[in-house]
Amino acid sequence: MLRTWFGGVDCAVTTLLLHYGTVAAGDDFALAMVLVSLFGATLAGYVPLSALMPSLAPEHKGQAMSALDLGAGASTFVGPTVVAVFLGPLGVQGVMWIFTGIWRAPGCPSP
Image (cartoon, rainbow, N blue to C red; front, top):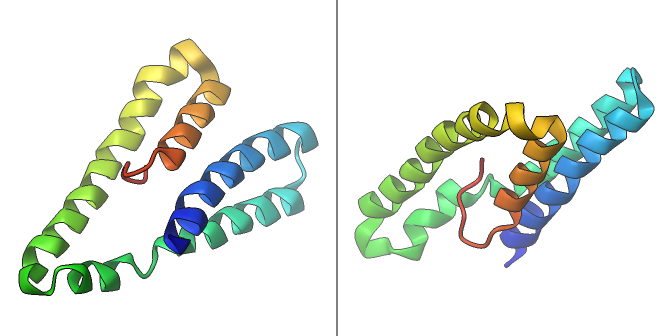
């Protein structure tokens, strides 16, 4: 449950905060670094996942790690695909809202 909040919801919030904060502040490098650091801190909610996955299914540790690797691999495909497909029609703001929805979607792999 805690991973859901720190990993999913907080990443969704800080994704929008990163976009709108830097748009509103303009070329404020210090603010951008603070916002990126907040995003990184919330992203750290996913760090213990590789240690937790095998413990969720101790009799199937290989399959659990395989599922985790599949999610990680899928996210390296989904993220750039979302940008390639939606950047033209929706712009950066639209893509940021899509990423926010992906972060927030329960059971959805991280982008």
